[in-house]
Length: 250
Length: 248
Image (cartoon, rainbow over all chains, first blue to last red):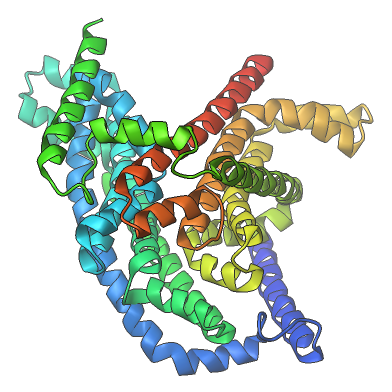
């Protein structure tokens, strides 16, 4: 198994190198127009040039994402628990939740921008709307699927409603909550970036958009790589956290 | 029955509240249902946007092209990664990592590369639709009972036969879920692309109405686009149900 993992790693590294060298070669030989596909070496050079602006834009974007994320977890998890555990709420609200979850949020983005203008507020609101529903839906599903025996036994031993939620339900749904939070962070970041591209004056989305409009492909690729790395790091961090939490749960 | 009553009560209350709030407010920002309906009528009778049908057809064409490409590439990639263990272990995690990047970061590059016309929307719809399809095929291939495969191979079945007659039926359940998600995301990709920058299509009309503060027309366009999206998903659900019934 470990030998196979090592071989898989080797294949990953080798194909990365092959891709980069073919790309570099194609660009140097003039097979592709460097205006649209700059060589990796040019992208690396551009990273140094655009790095400062991109990093400050990324910082701003991540700060908005963090606020949106905190809001969507703070609203989504309790709402999800309520809708998942109270049968009447679930039966009445589920079509609305499904409809709102499934609706492409981009359609209301112009209206949000009309209401809130160009700035931080629309990015946070839109990011929250984006992250809220996946978290809510996953948590509600997790609560609904909690083993009924656990609840019955706790009831039989005279647990109060408070104890039922705090001692039985919450520990049982930790993996679902973490899964929802992992999904939510990508959606929040996505929402914030979309707003910045659509109507931003600052932030990473705006940086990417203006680099594209200026036909600065090397800088654009460098900045894109930077955001991608940041979001992969965030997701891997949350994965690590969820592994830790599942150990803690036993 | 009581559930339906409660649901309709909530819906009516929400619409009533919206009407009450929006009536007194700035009509450039808030559109009450009573103003949205006439705007919808004007839109559907082609008064506000005479080219509506052409734009709608363009958006549908972009969606279909993007989905067809995502379907082909997703099935091929997923099968290649699923059928070969080592290749799957090497490239599967890379695919999953790329899926974790909010796809919209690629859109400026696609726009630079493919321009403002349909090609960049198709490319973005393809990119969004590709991942769930490829990952569903990958997950599906791993679900197939290895004993069944071994028996099929022992009886001399060729790889193509094994794939179409043994693997596809037993992974269909997972597969159709991925195909449906792929369609939904391809639709979203095309529409997001159109709204972020385009010259034609439903997204371009929405942007036009929004830019000119024709907010009632904007609401009507959003409603029409929603019908388009819900319709495509309903079609996918129909296919999904049939496929699932077939496997049972």
